Image 1 (cartoon, helix red, strand yellow):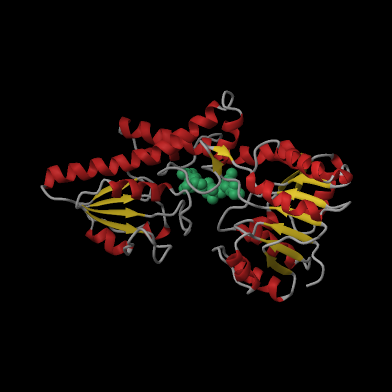
Image 2 (cartoon, helix red, strand yellow; image 1 turned 90 degrees about the horizontal axis):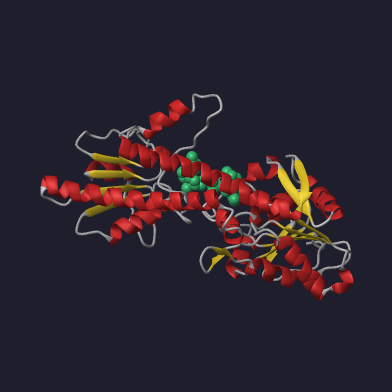
Length: 405
Ligand code: SAJ
């Protein structure tokens, strides 16, 4: 491989597709990951995550010599930081991976280099990293370009959205913003909107918090409608006939590694001000607990009525429909909670998008539905739509499969 122009630190769900996209453009990319197995897999032209079209993109990039992975960064012109920002203590953002990635590239930086953070980060992180860089390399002060540019791709459609979504790009100064825009312009067909680093950081958090708040509204309605004996699906459909109303769908809670996480980055730093954002998180978390309780109640009711233990089907484990990703999944949480209270009932755990799971014994969805007395729909996978269910089944439709309560 020729001298890399780009170093990509973090080869996960966003870093690897982005590296492949840049490499497809015949720009040399040196990918870095702390996991040697990930590095080995990528260098073999293979991938360690499931994402449509990513396998071909990585295979081509590696074969063409434009993408190489390693556990260590090397010198380049542009450094992209795309590592996770998990939680520490009680829902506080942990930027130690961003710090470690930055520390790893600091010795390699030279005048005129571009350093970009894409990782979801609390407000002020880019400025903090700038201070860290200049504290160790004071001779580079004002001589680097430093910017924040969050990703906003939807899992399952990453390769398309990476190219066509608009991006928000915020430098620590105007020249950094311009330099980062020129970099992304090479690969991205969506519009590139310029701002400052703090606004770009907040923008990412706000996008996901906005969706979380809107889903919380739908989930709150589902709790009210359950008590008020109103079909929430019909209600939302009717309310959405208003030209300026667009309510989202209730479900069994909010999952994934973004929407259920990012709002806490605002709440942790601005707890007094972020009342709605914090409450939305509580409502969406409570909705999962409520679903588990509903299953428990249905189970006890069945036993009282029939004098025997019911068979129970839990339909879906993924964090949203038609994917195999179980990270932060409310359906998985509900299954765990229900199984903790198991008392000799027979359970059928269903997840058509995965073959096997190390904790849950999986059952085919048709078999589960035919053998169960209680069917709890947790995820609206396509396979579950249009199933014929006999009238003697108790159906708990948490995700709108039947659009009946
Ligand atoms: N959900 C509902 N009701 C709805 C819509 C979603 O309960 O009406 C639930 C889903 O079942 C799931 C959760 O919300 O559990 C999140 O799913 P999602 O499809 O809304 O979002 P993600 O997490 O797959 O991706 C989001 C996207 N952000 C926004 O739509 C604002 C994506 O564009 C971001 O790039 C991604 O987060 C990220 O990486 O931050």
